Length: 71
Image (cartoon, rainbow, N blue to C red; front, top):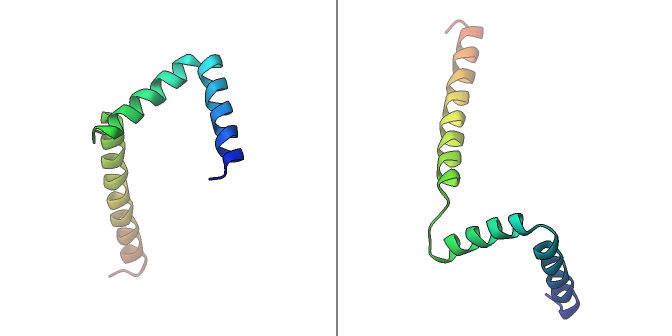
């Protein structure tokens, strides 16, 4: 990353911390959790839901295809 890009990111971060302190605090907490190797509970739950939804979708598609061909 160039020095100019780093300067722009620093300015954006400073503006964010000034204008939306609640959001900045949430980001700080997520960064701290990543640094310790922990993930927020909601990411684990969301990942699990997505995996289960993907499996269920695959099974439903298989059933529809088999039914369409009367197998």
